[in-house]
Amino acid sequence: MLSPSLSNALLDSWDYFLHLAVLLIPLFIGASFLVGLAQEYLPPEKVERKLRGHDEGTGNIAAAGLGAVTPFCSCSTVPVLAGLLQAGAPLGLAFSFLLASPLVNWIAVLLLLGLFGVEITVWYVIITLLAAIVGGFVIGRLELSEYVKDVRIGDDQGQAVAADGGATACCAAETTPTTTHRDHIETAAREAWSFFIDTLPYLLLGMTIGALIHGVIPVELLHAVLGPENPLAVPLAALAGAPVYISLSGMLPIAASLSEQGIAIGTVLAFVIGGAGVSIPNLILLNKLFKRRLLLVYAGTVVTIGIFVGVVFNFLIA
Image (cartoon, one colour):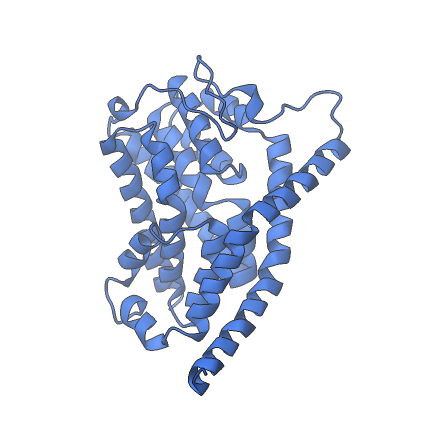
């Protein structure tokens, strides 16, 4: 038999799980549909072509903007990145795209909107976009191009990057004159449902962990590690995100639970950024493209952005 206190804690966790499910599942389905539309109208090879002709400066702005609106996962982002670098795009420009892609994407924005409201979401997008632009520009000045490997990398369907550095056309279908808007919408709807079904286990796992954090883990323990009384709370959160990363859809329910338990919003966002940008699957893919020093520079840049965002938000929203 369970003790009354544990029974009450588990019931509280179950109630919070249902709350997250009602809030997040409709948002996630809607976000998945927008992701499908974006991939229909802006496939990876088109993004690559748009960025090839840009130089640093305005190119960093364009790269961060396209990285934000193109909802590619790491297995698609890395081939686009490889194509940009092998085609001679500046490293700093490519880094702005790489930094913005996991941190500012449609799923993150819509889920953040549902969990934390308009003000926090808008500030998150602005600050992370600026961080991606500035981070890419600074990295471009460090002369690290020699640490890029000269390799061919497959896309998410196992296809190789083209010999001229471009992504192969199979990564996503180009718009043809015979493709109507209705065709795009129907394809996006099918892809959205497929993406939702594939990602649902991670979303459920994230909601389960978030519910247990909410109902079972003592608030005192969370605050001892991530509370304002710990001066290292934000750096710890940024570093802790990577090893516990399951998927962005799984991270955000955990983030919501931490926020509900009184952890400062900046600390929570540092946790999300660290997990989204320095996840182990992402690093494994980037290891095929970057030598160790450049891989460390990337990881350090993401953690720095996470700490910066965390400190800024904790200052603005005290």
